[in-house]
Image (cartoon, rainbow, N blue to C red; front, side, top):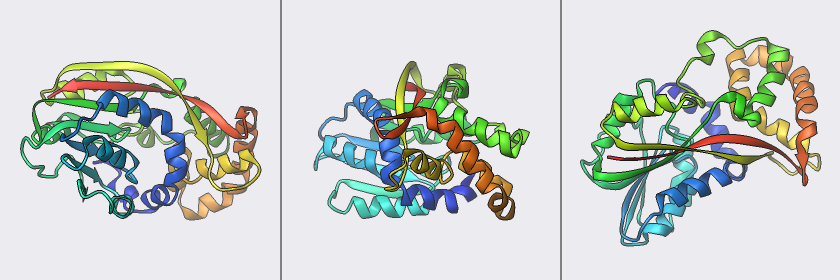
Length: 282
């Protein structure tokens, strides 16, 4: 998987530390993909990129004690948080691994689930061919991925503000894999079709991201803190290096404040996100 060092570093730690905020941001996405999955009692399901475990636990409730859920994530901090949260769920196993290379138990799972954990492989067909070996013949797939950046103001608005301070991102930083690597449905067809999946479908949907972390009374301050901790702008800051990042942080925060202030609704910064709901069969 690309960016493994990042997920073993600050990014993974921040996602684990702020999982309640990321769960709030991704709540509508998670609900949509869980509905697409429709977990049944007794099933065995693989949660790809399980993060801090919210979707893993939701699936565990769906499959019950007779079922099994395996969460896999490359971040040790996220895996540790999921294991902690999963202690009351004996049907849950959590693996710290790169799913592109992990030796999954052959034909073990009835379904593959992923809430935005599927877009980060350097070689998607090879990665999903490896994952498919762990799926039963005919196993169903329920995943989500982002649509084009231009249709995702939750990212485009703060990224434009960051660019006004930091300048354009380096070409290599813009290249896939990354959060928008599956923006084009033809890429999804290539990734899954090249791995042997069939009946591939992509349903577009617009959801709302509620952005913010902490208890500051100012919703824009909460949103700025989150944008600078996780997501595309946080990654840009990491790429700048520690010294440069600290020098530009006050100016960057001011630019983000100006950009995000018009999007406050009901006490939170809220921005649209365009996603794909991806279905397939192994």
